[in-house]
Each structure stands twice: as C-alpha cells, then as structure tokens.
Image (cartoon, rainbow, N blue to C red):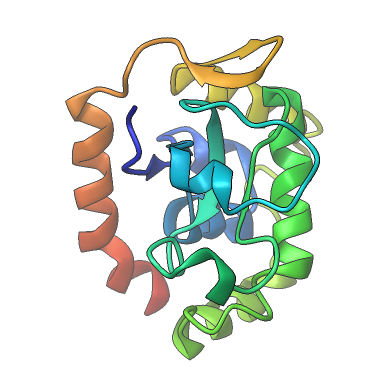
Length: 171
C-alpha cells in the first residue's frame, strides 16, 4: 500500500482555480492510501478499505490520530466528492489544526477574498473531478483508489512542492 502522500495539485490548477484553492491543493492537502493504522483510528461508521485513497492535511499527517484536530483527513466516496470534502476540511480543520503555521494561516486568510483566476470558470467542480482522474484516481464500489501506484513524477512534484512552499507563502 502506498501510504506516502502525493500533491493534490496539478499544473492546470492555475488556469482553473482561485488562488486560495490553488494554495490549499498545493500546500495543505495531499492524497494518500489508507493503511491499517488509518482505518483503526477512525470513529466513523463508513467502511474504509486498505489502499483506499483519501485526502489529508500535510501538516498533521504524522501526528497520532487522537492528537489531531477534527477532520484532518477524509475518504471521499468518489472523485465527485473531493471538492465537498475539501470544503468541510476548510471549515472544520484548518482553523483548529495546531500544526498549521501562522504564516500559512495568514496566507489562507489573505487569499480568502481574492478574485478567482479565470474568474468566470463555472466548471470548477468538474475540474476537481477531472484533475483527480488525471492523478490516477478511479471510482469503485468501495471508494476511490489509484488505478496504479503513483509514479516517480508525482513524488518529484512533492519534493518540488516543498521547495516552492516558501515562494507561495511569501507572496
């Protein structure tokens, strides 16, 4: 099972999403596959399977589950539910996660009211679905899974993501 996270962001984000959503997808959230530990720490009734793809906060992903703020990760039932899961995380996790730095919080707040890039893009939610598919996620009767294990290119993007973190938070 591939448990190391990969970026939720894609190169096309800048053309289709608001600066705030670009920042969230690039700096705060990642896609990962559920491990036995992820499943055993859950209190929800919804069944999650080993290897199922989820999204999580990169800042608290290594903190023991019981010490994290609420909604630190989610297992959307399909690619069409990713946007909704992110929205829930924005409202319930980002403000309470003690692992998110003040600098990142400040950037989130400053981006909150900025106009969307490609402002008239009414297909934003569809973009979230298509970008998930582009990352290799597929819908199954048991939730989202990677069609095949993420490639080295996705891992390289994660390294570049870390290197670019300072650039995005300083603008």
